[in-house]
Image (tube, each protein chain N blue to C red):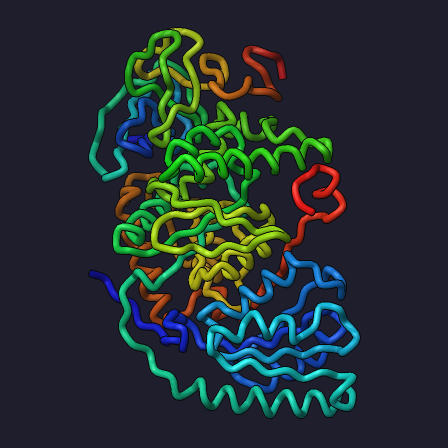
Length: 392
Length: 103
């Protein structure tokens, strides 16, 4: 059995990084949060831009990110008058047993005093986190998120099928794989449903893709439309287009649909392949999967996406030889060898799998070396959801 | 020799990784790296488009990624270009540029 080396958390989960997360529950307090984080090694500040009302979808995702095992400790930096309070997030994160502390500008004497107080707390957490050592764990402790962005004609032939091989290998060793982006599943719901482990899961797949199509239809977009560019690029049907995207999740049975709404936020309950309801926007899509527990992301790209993530290493895989040559600073894995027969899909998949294990054990990705700390939370439009009858 | 990539062992089409002229020879590679076959193309096939790996009757399933991506609307011989002119979706009709429609 393959092992990776990670940091065990009090709740038994295993981090692949030792980040300290500084969360500003609202954007009004992001400046002190950023300044506190900048004083302490391994710290990263994040916020959200959906206002200070306690939107449950935003709360669920921020709590999820704080609970992620890549986070060794959490400092919440509030303003004071917000409805989405620091305490609300702390309550959700504390059951993990990791240190969670709060500073609040209005309570603690304004910006400078809050920064000093927060920096001292975070500095202490950093010293405690520095004592943790990596230990070997089985892959059943690892959750991988797969994401694609900036796709091109090579994505469906090289990067996505090879990443799918790695996803299958991880699952076969007890690991968990998440994939999302429901609007890219249009036309394949019957195929995905056919891979569901039980009828209830198949129903949830149809319901999730149906909701996404209804949202797009309400916005005047036909999600089954094949663009001229798609057809010129060689895509014949909507099934082929969607299958090319979902192949990055591999071929194993689908264990369940993870709801990500104002009513519920699900996490995988056991190993295998899981679908998450979410968005097609790359950064929030990664954030939602990280909030559900993913410690590592594999990101396939054709044109060359550069994004990373605040608390998870992101491994970039491209099947486009020109992108790999032109953006060598950003691309971790060259899958374009599949195109000229230099390597098989399976051989590149094994390389991606090995890379996942190495990165989980501490090797930095290119996005990490570049200090990319992307973060965004997506929330569906509450008014539109109510009008469509999806969520109260 | 130019290559075509079969993504799943069950597929009856492969994707060409460089543009092919009619009559050109192409080597079809399996996901495991083996050579599935060497074919002579009957059509010119652009980069990223599909070639038939076996003879398909009208109404036959076109398989890629191990799944049905569409139905043949005409008989397709091995080595033929497989696209919107001879395949249609089993789920929804392909919109945008239709079959045989001028650009």
